[in-house]
Amino acid sequence: MDYRETGERFKELLKLENEPVAIKWSVREPEDINREEGKSRFCEKLEKAMKGEVFYSTADEEDCMGGARYTGLRDVSEFPANMRSGAFLTAMGLYRDIPAVQRSWRNNINIEPGIFRAVIFAPLGMAEFEPDVVFLICNARQAMEILHANAYDSGSRGLGADSGPICSSMAALPYLTGKVTYGFGDAGSRRHMGLGMKTSW
Image (cartoon, rainbow, N blue to C red; front, top):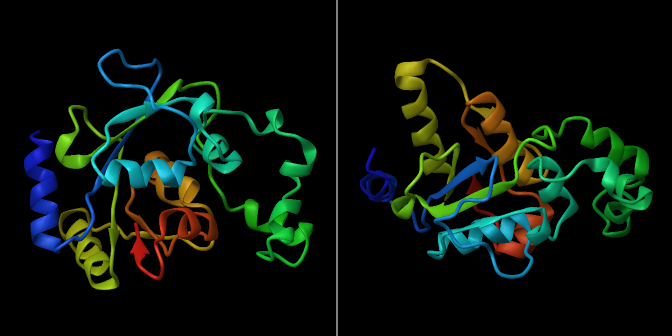
């Protein structure tokens, strides 16, 4: 498939302001793609790709517990107990207490750790690989159009994301289910990507 043409077609039909991002999980580090320089969060990697960068990232380049955990690059047991408890989210004012954090995390889905070595990111129009997931930032009307287009021949319904991190709800979840997912971006991605009130899916 010509992903350059597909990317341009997406942008044209939906009138997207941002580049769609192609994401692929890899069991080995690719030899023909540059490794990310320095560390960043999963959501920041998406923004880099939207701005034209093509790169791959390993656990060493992931600067967020959620990004490493939900994409399967690290096992949650590798993190200290104070991070696994979710106490840092109560300190940020996102949840009243640790039990609320723990309850919310029960709905988060992650890729099994230890399988993949790297995650590859590229603007869809520059992807020279078949994406496992395509990530878009769009408005509500654009999201409605893609959900209807998806249902046209599949008859399937999209999955709604809640306040969970996008590395789980809009990366791991569509990877594992093959379904369109949508949401509003979590607090971390809104802060680090400048999403504001736009819808992402």
